[in-house]
Image 1 (cartoon, rainbow, N blue to C red):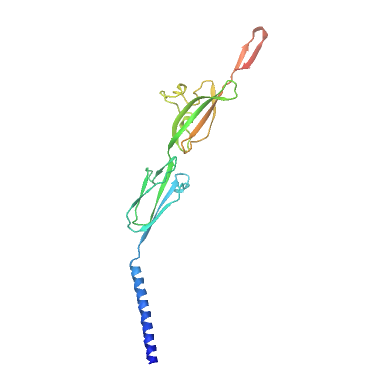
Image 2 (image 1 turned 90 degrees about the horizontal axis):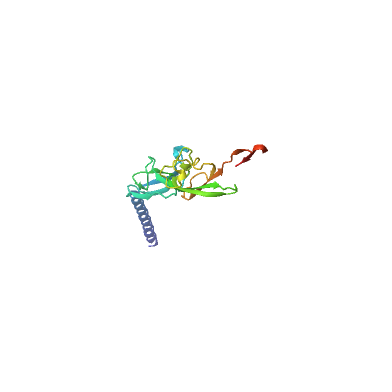
Length: 223
């Protein structure tokens, strides 16, 4: 009787093991049948720099990466805002949103190029004492981030209908004020935040004048 009981126990144990093995095999097979194929999409953001390979300069933002099931519904990814720059695709077309599709793995490059921002130019003339400068005029304009204002180009002349200082009309900054010489300006280029305030310094010209003093002789003095 004891031997019969042991045989039954052994048989039951074997059956349990076989059942567990079969169940595990069925689960594994089911999992293999439901594996989901995914695709990875990446959007790279670069400052446009023609001196770098592929025009890919520094990155203003980390890349956007999405991993989704293949053929998922397309989505729109908005380009991050960068003050003083506008986003473009590789064809040079303006971009606000990038359409992200999930047919296959791929990467998209977005370039940030300088855009026009505000700046002002303060024109300062040396005073009579020669120890300070007085504000003569303020010019308000727009120009591309990181560039030198067009007004500083010696070939640039203000339009005849310029609504600012009338001495600038039809003139360049270099020739605007007779009797003065434009010495220098600061800072060098337009900042991205649109708050750049340039200062141009004009020094008075000095001339040698000879005085005929009659019987007393001759003399010279600067004016």
